[in-house]
Length: 311
Ligand SMILES: [Zn+2]
Image (cartoon, rainbow, N blue to C red; front, side, top):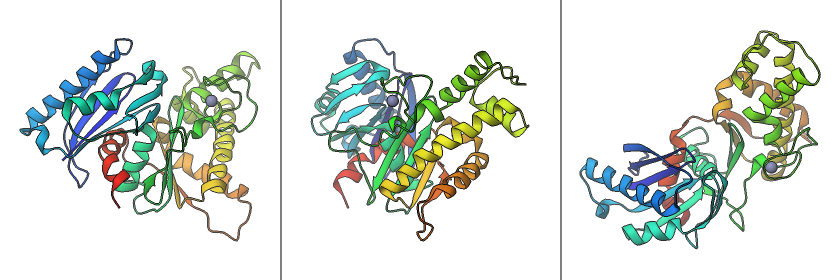
């Protein structure tokens, strides 16, 4: 059995997972961001102990513990390098969990963990090389090369959301201008639509502007909805074609809240990306919707140890 932990800014999801990818038991607790990291890690330890007890097993029955979190994780040193949502810098998360449980502990960026889960059990299953792009408030990316997570030389790779795709009217949280997530995330769509209404005075039927209402309005022919979706598709397609040109994966999966737009989104992406291939002599990868939803982070985290150190 494996332990998977999805450490987020608002909640910590943990579960016991078997080798076939079945989540046997799970729980969710409030992260309580802003408290001392020691208290948060102690809560996580108690959460895992309760899961073991409730399932009627003990830590002896566990192979390894894996954690995914929205940040840069140094899996070798056991330190979280940087995790802005938790206000964490150089936090010995892996070390503390290892000392407490005396089991191997593995850590990864949460989008990489989710990409691993999709490649083992979901939308990209069977692909040797695949990429997951998660689109919510921001944009995350996970890269699987030769069936394994690629996290870069400094644990800072696969930051697809911060790929620069063109000048924008506002800056990204990272300090740069032009990041993909400032064009194609749910927040980016909202900001652009509001900007067009307030600065350009465009008329719209949308009352409560958010990614969902923008997609709905576009389908009904609302001008602002159409323009906002078209702009999002244009820049997301630039990001995707950059990924195809750089990595040539067999498949790119789109996950996160915005992927609820479904085939309406992927059909538009395929059409736009299809126009941008630099040669039509090559069969490029497919673009699909992710399948595992919110479970992907926990599931992928559980399999980190197996993915990193076994063929
Ligand atoms: Zn950025």
